[in-house]
Amino acid sequence: MIPFNKPYKTGKEYIYIEDAIQRGKLSGNGFYTKKCQKYLEYKYGFGKCLLTTSCTDALEMAAILIDIKPGDEVIMPSYTFVSTSNAFVLRGARIVFADSCPHNPNIDPNRIEELITDKTKAIVVVHYAGMACDMEKILAIAERNNIKLIEDAAQAVDSYYKGKPLGTFGHLAAFSFHETKNIISGEGGMLAINDMQYTDRAEIIWEKGTNRSAFFRGEIDKYGWVDIGSSFLPSEIIAAFLWAQIENINQIQEKRKAIWNRYNFHLKGNNNYYTTQEIESDATNNAHMYYLLCNSLEQRSKLISYLRNYNIHAVFHYLSLHKSPFYKDKHDDRELPNCNKFAERLVRLPLYVDLSLQEVDYICEKILAFEI
Ligand SMILES: *Cc1c(COP(=O)(O)O)cnc(C)c1O
Image 1: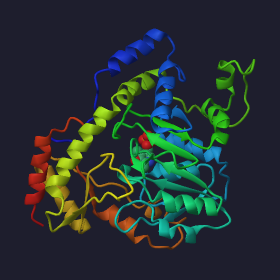
Image 2: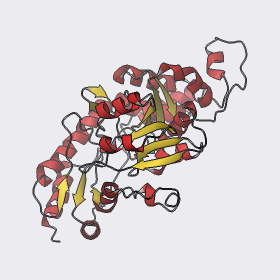
Image 3: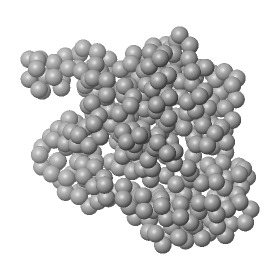
Image 4: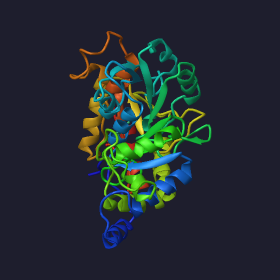
């Protein structure tokens, strides 16, 4: 069986977890948490990083930080994971779903401005498959209209737009270290803060609404309840696992890219029932995902079950959020045809570090032999 995903271990995880236990501080914001945060700030140039227990939590922190209130509107793509919108719905926002680009699932920058009203508080972009949205256009829209820009960079670690790392464009950005992502800790995430006006309050929200972080730095002589917040920080055991991954990020990325390139070598242009992923010229490929876009829902279903017969586990992805049971009655009547297209026709192929190039060859051979 070739699974869709297999969590990768560098081998150092056990060593660092044992060390974290030996250090005798298992709760959050200790040695390994700081090590991960510092390294990622340094490597990618984020203003400040805070590890969280998930990308979902980082998005929830972002919604609190930009003061989302009932009635505020937040624009985001409909083709995304539920957490992107849930985080803002929890604070009372109304989600205004935008359509995807015709050629990839990222938010269509040409269909954002028409959705802006005087209630619009933020735009949330999702760099799907780790490929950058059109940040130049989107930044200009956010600035022109004086609204906050948040990046859901869950899939976008180690990816760039015009040479600048994703997660450095928004006022805030959220990353995921869920086991299906490039760099993992089982469950895990991170809030990257680029607008430094948010750093003090972010630490408070992170530490249950207390100024505990400032207390431990010796900046104040007692700590107490100063704001809303929750328990958003992961334990040192999680951070120790994550450090083993972060330390090996270049090697992990190299292996994933080799797999991606092998897929593309075989599958690109060689077909009559799908099209392959195109990487925009301003963007890089972080090899988070290799997907095909089938010509119809029916063909996709047939392809997935055909591959299952060869023990290859390929999977579809998001369902349109504007048509979800929870949101369909709250959505205005706009059709989002590109979003629906990706929901119906996109299929993701197995991609994990331990997938061998021979296995990729085998998968591609089956895909090319598939008859509609
Ligand atoms: C994985 C993912 C999330 C959620 O990440 P968690 O760490 O599981 O909370 C959110 N948004 C996108 C686009 C994702 O791919």
